[in-house]
Length: 149
Image (cartoon, rainbow, N blue to C red; front, side, top):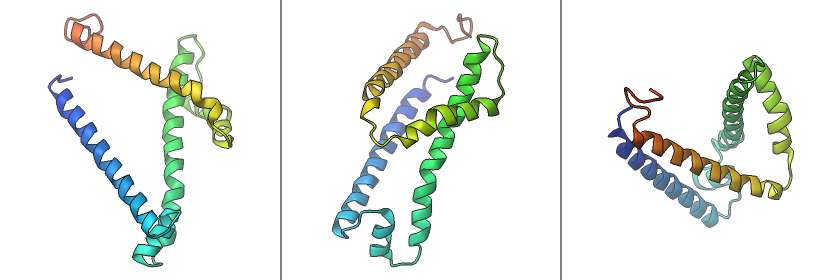
């Protein structure tokens, strides 16, 4: 809740973005030089055969961890939205509904072109949320004595 932390947080986000972008570029260059098309091939070409399977397993598990994280956030959001209309589902039920009826069909899509318009809407929604938060931050609504404190 300290506005002075905003500058520090923004600097860290930018620095980490630059750092991860640079690491991605390095991985791409090493893959190009070793004629590798996967992390495992790149690892084995540069480090030898030992550990290649671990790299492959981790490369498989990381997107799954991301899916679980998204499903968790979405299920809690669904639970909160349903509570506003007096429907009280458990977190597990919301998680199952989100996973089976939303995320699974998206994961099974072979061509994601149909999602392009929704991506634009999502980016616009994030921008709108950012503008709303900035307005509330600067008008004092969240400060002690503010309307939303």
